[in-house]
Length: 262
Image 1 (cartoon, rainbow, N blue to C red):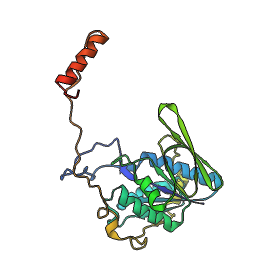
Image 2: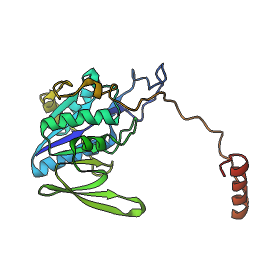
Image 3: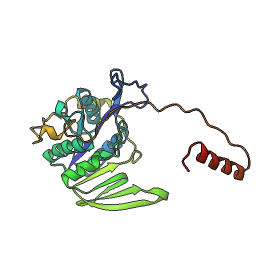
Image 4: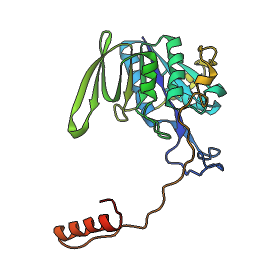
């Protein structure tokens, strides 16, 4: 079985961020990058299944040259091969154009199941995996917290509101979008790090995947980030005192007269 895992390299959430000069994104010049959190759980799930059932784990990513670091880490953790969509034509995409590119790369490898994270920690579209499934015409499930592989099927558990779980059986091939916390991601061993240096990373071009450059990356995107900014600082909280009835009346009065939302 060929198992695909889609990962993304994102800015470290603990890093101190600054805006770029044009205000359209952050200044990436001194920012450390890491594998997106939920993608790490997707990778662990894929590797665990390959170890238990047998199979080959192939990791895919879209990004500039620095994204190869994320692929090398995935290979050190136990993935067998990697595919890096590093051509400039792939850059600047949204969920639609990225999903189209990833679907073409995964179809080329004839993978039988795809694991992705639920959403990225930077732009947070939460849609790339679903778009990917659409282009592949495969069933998919989002926010998955449990996976059981069967013969030609996959039973997945989704955590719902109110403490309920939803259990579904998906026919393979399928796309599984996992939630952070589904498992416990492993650490890379020294042996794994050394072996990763010898594992192959393929870098197909758009033409290798049969893709029109106008349909991928920034050219094929329907969503454009116009600007980013830090949240405005508030003026602080106002504490309302009195009995519950008095506080409720004061709150309603302020919502009507000051906030004007009622």
